Length: 143
Image 1 (tube, rainbow, N blue to C red):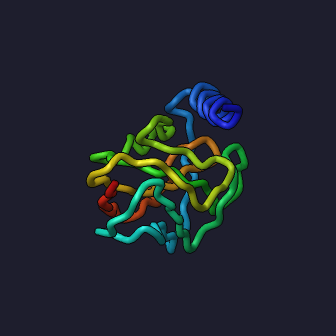
Image 2 (cartoon, rainbow, N blue to C red):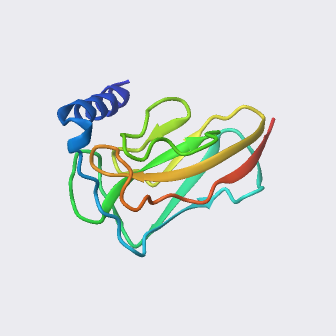
Image 3 (cartoon, rainbow, N blue to C red):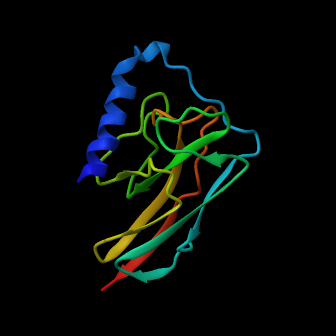
């Protein structure tokens, strides 16, 4: 419960601390590559699902830490399109934040087909310029 409070507090402080027109986007490395190591696209899995994140060309830093060429992971679950890249990434059941710098997670998913995608956020959860995003994969969760 404390983790959600901290994540939401950082999100709100980052969102309201500066006027939206004054938010300077963090620059991504030209060779940044974000991807899902596992599961693989099309894989049939059971819940809970272990998801391992991959990142090349940049580093991982916790939310709130502003350091060049770093960010932290956000997992998009069953999201049809990317969130607004000029605003902090939402935090809800479809947009999972990993603001402590985590590089893997285990999540519960209902049986059926699900899409998974990663997007890197900066110290205040705003996507970089250019956006660092993984390929969207689909998995099938069986009971």
